[in-house]
Amino acid sequence: MTNPKSFARRRFMIGLIATAMGSSVWAETIDRSLLGEAKHKLVYQLNKADEEYIDHILFSAGEMLRKYGDDIRIVITLIGPGLHLVGKKPERPITKLAQQRAESLAMYGVEFHACGNTMKSLGWTDADLLDYATVVEVGAADLMELQEQGYAYISW
Image 1 (tube, rainbow, N blue to C red):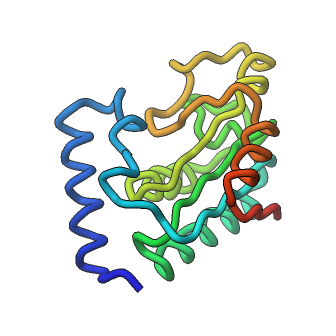
Image 2: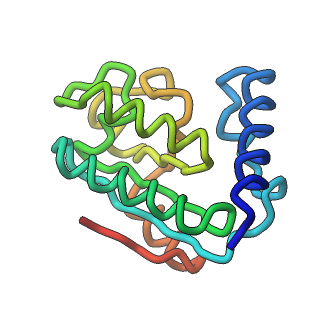
Image 3: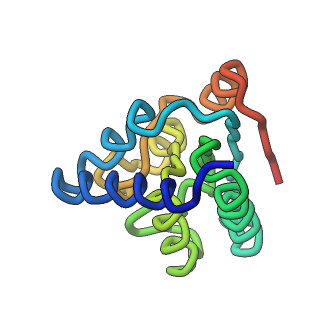
């Protein structure tokens, strides 16, 4: 297991760098070369705007971070109604608490991949997303490609 103090220090430093560079470059700041390659890789599919469902996924991601520290890379791929979690003005019932928890996870290196197809269907652009979200062309392809790279796939 990675030293928790070392983990916290590195994440804190990355946060400082991101703040200094501005929030628009947050995704580029989380550079795996700064953290080293993680032994464990995990991708969650989040495709519902249901409060309990979202809470379970965010809680699970947080627990995986606590268990593995620097030794895990986590991606949450947001598809369909799940995309609203990272919307600046969600059009589905997303709680402020869920968005705060997601932002906190992002500060610890969890990546949030927003499905570009879903964005098109909603008429959304990058400007409609919270700063920590990264757009991928097709959410389903993102899930497949991450699994091909050795990510374990979790669906609720």
